[in-house]
Length: 159
Image 1: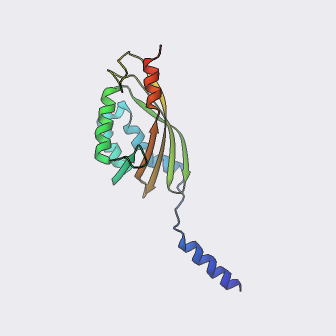
Image 2: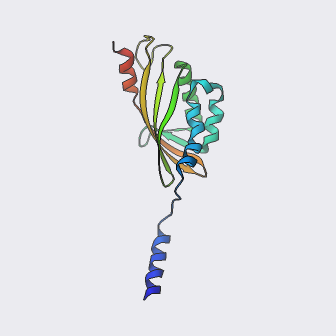
């Protein structure tokens, strides 16, 4: 009877795909080049840093079904770094569950011109971001992200 229970448990466990738990430091090391790429200080290295931390078929999603390819993200980040020449993005928290890494980040910067409909004022912003990255082989294969850009616009337009 014990062997039947053991056999059933083994079959049940093998039917569920196992996801290896990534350690927090390994997860941080895997995503760190991507967050470095978001900083104006590293603008010239940004495309290479993104490629270093992502798989070739990586997609970044700003909605459940609204995703961009790696090349589209590289172009978009390049434009953002030009429009906010002092952009700084910091990792504040790293949470790991299986092969998913959730990052709470913070972005600060001062736009050089009109920004997301806000007229240029010389003011700065500070916003929070939440990103959920799926990692395979130490590379990001899919990301979902939310940034508080409405909060940034509010900060840029409020006295």
